[in-house]
Image 1 (cartoon, one colour):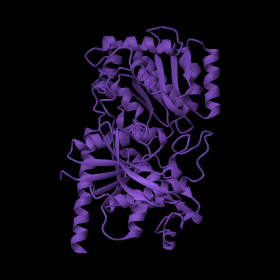
Image 2 (cartoon, helix red, strand yellow):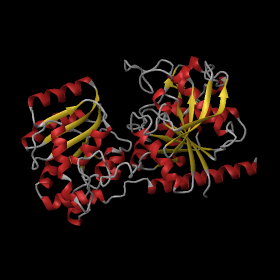
Image 3 (cartoon, helix red, strand yellow):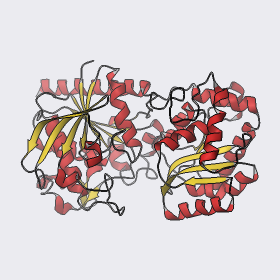
Image 4 (cartoon, helix red, strand yellow):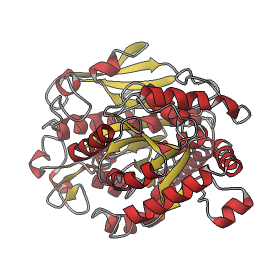
Length: 490
């Protein structure tokens, strides 16, 4: 069913504002859906940095008072993206990031900021903008979770609704005292409503009231219905099991294309692998590593947190260095982990290099120059880093969890014999198993024909949005048909 209209609600969207993979998905999925015949507009908050990057704007709706101040909805263009932007200075015109101030502490009014954001999403879904009447409302993560609740308590006709869980660990739980300020009725404060452990659960509300729940990989969909992986929402998710589906993420293969990537020292593709080593040399230079084409170079592009298992690699560094390896790390996060890698870089000059920040251009160079990308996550809903690594010929070494399990073919004996391996998996995610995976990777690296086959297998993998977009198209069509049947029975 082509010609359907989708309202996407996302608190960040690449390339306008990004803190993580949610932004990449919100920016790339609409473009992939367009090839399936869908029209998508994304509602995003009017952060100052985002407003400054818009190509054009037109006011299409106004609020005299939206949870504490006047606000406008702008229809906007930013490159190929069609947007609605909530221009609410009392909520979003402030320094810092989308969710926290310059000191790193969460904004104390985040419930109101994103409650208003959801309220506007629900209003657009009900026809507040005459020129865009969506057939589907697709919410992303807790920041958009209340939109489906507002539609439920408003009553009346509404589009089909879906919510995507990008990371179940972030749930958006706030004081129940905010119920009236958020414009929710008293009866919403119930288990069959927005109540969650005595507070208001934004993500819980989205999971309860949305017609469909998606998450970003099939394995993660299975993990989150277990007590171990469900972060206290497993019971609700099990009860919604018939409506829960895992659709793996993709990447924008125009943005992530080594053949045309101007952020690389040397473009290359699967038919011109001889050009790739120039990027390895450039990467070694950027990180003050010894210029050594024979040293296996392990890259990381990561948040430095316990979830990401960065402590496991720190524990395995002596082994990796003893085998002649080098490390180039890009990321920031927990102070103890940064301090540990900083000490390693100081103790092993030319072998360990660190950049404790995030730099999109440097991320591209790591993908294009490293021999391996290490992702030892304790859990990983999908992961985009390994998809970029496959595309760029940087072989992933991953924990067998979530989307990492779904997207990497382990270099076991059978896969190597069949010449289909794309990376190295290990389980469980502990230091001993990571050490074994590193040894296997280094053994393959020292067998150049085997290494090249594995690298080419990865580069020829389809990591784009083409297949996931078709799956979302099918889900949207199901929802539209269900709503039509419901309206016919009403």
